[in-house]
Image (cartoon, rainbow, N blue to C red; front, side, top):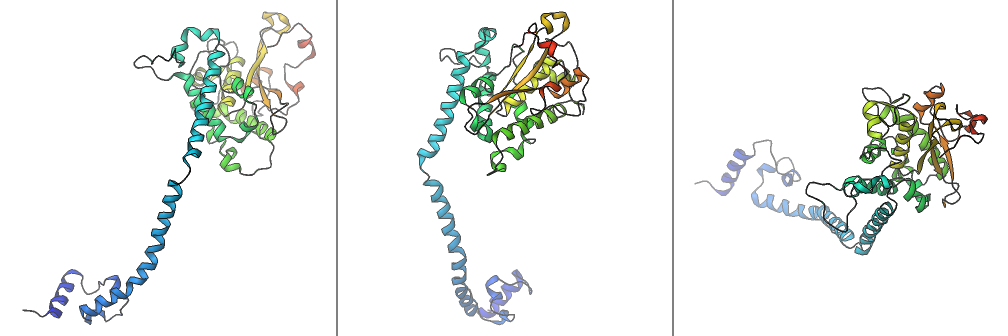
Length: 344
């Protein structure tokens, strides 16, 4: 029979090897293998205070973090949720009240609830719900939306369509496609910037009109202008799929992209130059630009979708922007606006 000392040494040599040592043993010097188990045990006990001072603050920190989260007033989070739900309901009600006659027969498939009835089996929320969701996401993400009056936002950001183009679920696609491009303009990135909201909007509009067409192009080819394609190719998804459109389709595309990031925009134009359909027509884009941080007294400024300026033989390498002299546009001639041309 081995005595306890021999038994201990044999066990350690089988399990740990000559070069292995327990953390507590290291603090007892290089000759610790020759010390007795009792001495080693006392060494470990002496190390407990050090362990106590390391572990205790960690435990306290965890408890504090847990309590700080658990004790956040529920009314703060619930109020935020209630505000989001209230805003969503207001937007849905606005769209329902102002639905285009063109859409009334398809009110259920668009996503409007009919007298609180459940949706038919297999039918999703529809594009209305998606459009409202991303309209709220834009308000959450981009600071310029704070200065836009609610009536302007509801009329020129929230709608799921611009005119009578085919109704498609383009809002999520455009919102997500532009997110990386606008990363520097998000609330978290912009911080306490002294840049005015007006300058932010102008800058972002120019950036989108510069990047959008290559970003949404196919096979590394940017979207380009081709004449006489309305109404065959003029909703955003068709423009993206084909890679080209005429002025109306390009205008709807740019309006939809600006709306997807919370910038109020609308299409304007004329169905007939000089009141004569044989003279051609044209569409362009108008953007609501706030004049101050309160959003009051804003103005509508216009520009052309960048691929569209090719119609006037301009270089599409230079994106159109809101600060450009209006009279520099190819169609801005006095005789075109002598009273015979109607614009809408």
